[in-house]
Length: 267
Image (cartoon, rainbow, N blue to C red):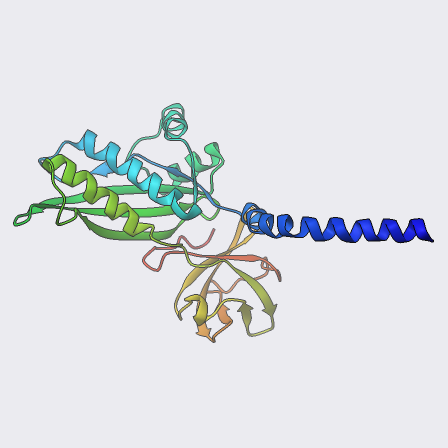
């Protein structure tokens, strides 16, 4: 009995001693468990006239990759790997949706990022640069744009240096603005399927609105297109514009597309 008591006492003491370490490790373990989407950033195109397109393109591509990696929003593929895949697949910029999906599948990433600089301008007193950057994220599985935005970044009023340095700072601030926080709409799940209604587990508190469009997937397969027609705080009712829902099952995942995207139906 004495031996068993001693063993029990030692176990309690070890547990007490290890508890602070376990508590310290818990956030790190949780962070590792979270799945971060992988992304390939294509070379940012420059449409603004009278500026060095090569220099701006490189600065913008690096800035977008850095902004996406910040706060662990995305895990960005190495630029050299992306460029090599583009070359091997004989793809060209600007890249079509089908080409972007093909590239994403080849690289094994979840998203492919297209972007372009459409405006570069200056104001004086103080001298500041202003850059307009447009970004879109292609979801590789569903073949649709899940996020797109157009932002303007400006160099700081107190910034000094050459115009090129001011432009580079404006580019970085535009990229940071585009990926300030999680930019995609949350993923949902089909929770109920009745004769005249289908429900998903996302609602207004998740940012869902009437009219939002989404793609239903099962595994890595796109199975249907849906549209939200009724929203409550925690769930939404959806309908199938094409009238077919035979392939949809409870528990299927729902990926929302960008509100400005034109969804390819019938796939």
